Amino acid sequence: MATVIIGVIIAIFFIDGIRHMLTSSKEGCCSTGDQLQKIKPEDTNKKHYPYSTSFTVQDMHCANCATKISNALNSQKDTMASINLTKKEVTVLTKQEPNINTITSAIHHAGYSCQIK
Image (cartoon, rainbow, N blue to C red; front, side, top):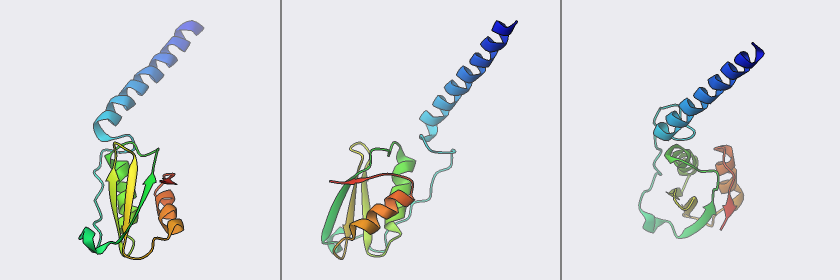
């Protein structure tokens, strides 16, 4: 009898894991199914941003991850973010000399770790 109960518990966890995997593959790894609203920078002309700094964000896995990071950076004054999800790279364009601590803090506040390239 105990073996049957243990088997049922394992089956429940297995089915829940499969369900979560299928849901994640459709929605993104950190999504609840809702599309995040993208925040655009105030100035979208890349020629107005003379400084460029790149970061690696290894724990960025899906489009929602990229949007969260982009939103965190684009909401800052005189900053524009460009994301390359395939390379797990964030390029931050700024109008003034970049403050690395401010940029990394924004990425960390969004829930991600980063390293300057």
